Every structure is written in C-alpha cells, then in structure tokens.
Image 1 (spheres, rainbow over the protein chains, first blue to last red):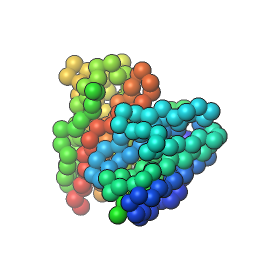
Image 2: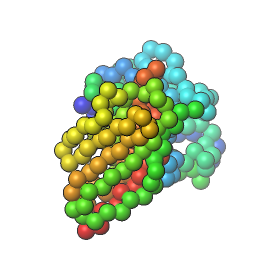
Image 3: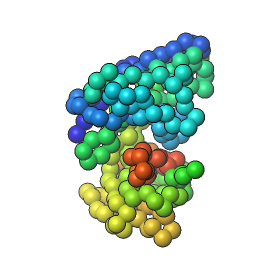
Image 4: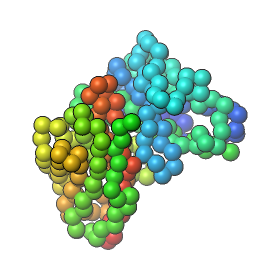
Length: 112
Length: 112
C-alpha cells in the first residue's frame, strides 16, 4: 500500500494569485497523477507526472495554468496559477501501486 | 470521448438492507473496472475491482457485477451500515495508457 499526504489540506485564496500543492508518498513510485474534483462532481485527471520527464497533460489542462514538478520518486507539486473562482475545487494526488491506485486526502481550494 | 456514467445520483437505504449502485461505461476496449468509496473530506478509497474476463467478483459484503454486453457495472453492498454512507464512484482503466476515467458518482445515504 501507499500512504499519501498533501499540503495544504485546504486554503482560501484571492483571485489572481497562485497556490502550490505538495504531495508526499511514503514509498517510491513511478507514476503520480493529479486530479481535480469540482464541487459535487467526479474526478477529472489533470496530468500524469513521471520523475525525470515533463508532465503529460490531459485535454483542457495546460502547463502554464497547472505547472507540475516531480523532483524525485516520492514527491510532486501542482501549482494552480492565476486563480479564478472557477478553480475552486478539491485537488487530489494519486499514485499507482502494485495492486491499485491510491489517492491522497485532497486539497480543498476556495478562490474568492 | 469515452465516458463512464451512473444511473442514479443519490440512493437512500435503510440500515440492514442491500444497496445496489449502477454504472454505465462507453469504452468497450476497457478491461479493468474499479469501485471507489469517497467519504466526506477524504480521497477515494478502493473497494473492489473486476477485470473484463470476469462477470462477477465478491468481497467482504460487496459484490461487483460486470455485463459487457450492455456495458454495465454494478456494486452490491449487503446489509448496508451507516458507515457505508459515502459517495461511490465507478472507474474505468484505460488499457492504452493506464489512466483512470471516473463516473459521476452516487451518494449513498443509510438511514438508521
């Protein structure tokens, strides 16, 4: 199994600012994923982050808006840039384990 | 594009009754399906999975049924308990990239 922690757990930010979310895993993993969960909605994949390479973004998500770092096999960051109220969501980090995909507790972001 | 959706957005059951949560998927090439449980303030938690070469799989109090003919997936929870109250998501594993595609989610409410 994999234990995932995220920082911050929640934040309230002003529009136009940026927030960097950290994801820490207790074991080395190759593939890490970042998801967005808008209020009352399902999870949507933002990007896949592999160590040593550029993140791969899904349709509708761009690097300028959601830059991602993956400096090693246990850590990743997602930045939400130039935020607007539409960015208010839960952002979840996820890793692929041997048997299943694990999710962090999420970061609840509110943009005012 | 591909999508995974649910028939019922909310489900309310009496404690002790059986619950059935349904899901429809559209990508006939998918070969792996997972049910997740998400409690308030937490990330999704793996419940049970099934591969496309099976039509039924049982766990502790849970059973997943897969009907590939009509692209339908269901989760059955036996003797539903208040602790089962959560949002349940079906997810489809993309066999061409390993990406999880989530359905809309069903909120299960268990009345004591």
